[in-house]
Amino acid sequence: MTEPFTPIEIAAGGARAAVLPYGAHVTSWVAPNGEEQLYLSARTAYAAGKAVRGGVPVIFPQFSDLGPLPKHGFARTRAWAVVRQAPNETALALRDDDATRALWPHAFATELSAALDGGALVVTLAVENTGDAPFAFTGALHTYLRVDDVADVTLDGLGGVTYRDATVGGVERRDDAAALRIVGEVDRVYLDVPNAVTVREPGRTRTVSAEGFRDVVVWNPGAERAAALADLDPDGWRHFVCVEAAAARPVTVAPGARWAGRQRLVAR
Image (cartoon, rainbow, N blue to C red; front, side, top):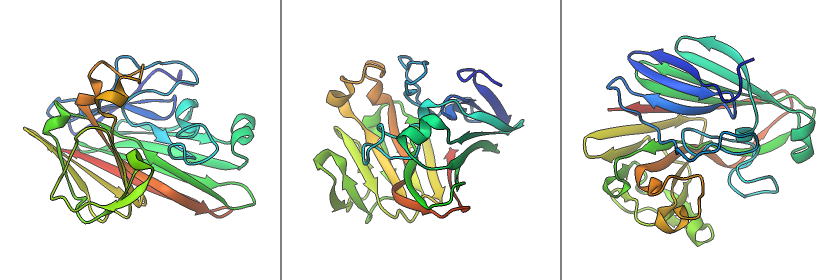
């Protein structure tokens, strides 16, 4: 079995990506033009029980602190097993065991696939209920997109969408702006996002589209909150914006049923 902190590398169409078995965590996606598209903190702790700061953490079975589990659940701090490997794709699986059932008393099987489709990165999360009773989960693909300076970034595709603003206790608001700019701390769950989100900065554009996931999370801690994050590079907050396909509201999976959500990232 691959060591959990040894990256699995895939390539296709001139693009490359790397995935850690630890957390089924995508840590790198290099576009065909040779530019890294994901932010990964140099201060991240590669240690059991610690989350990796950056890349694409897998949030399951609890989004944020909206429940009794550790924040963002346990999947991102567990070693996953490699179940499929090809030049352009890797798939990893996590199943319930004594440790997960002590936190979350359900039988499940999850699979995370990371694939390169030309230059695009496609990440798919599947959740199967292997028990005899229904369960509900929340989750996300917590994608850190690398940017030169977050002050120059605009996000399109969220206009007219209602969001929950975690910076003011989850108050729901409607985004009536022509484009979203990141000013100070931003922590929003956009509900039922109809279209892809386009992230623009001078000289570079990325699109984030999703299937199966109803919601989109946009997050940047801003300078003040970032200063309290020991595993974040100094001024690291300036160099990423998180745009993540999410199931921030509970998804119920019946016994024997399977749910899947997919996020596609394209760089231009």
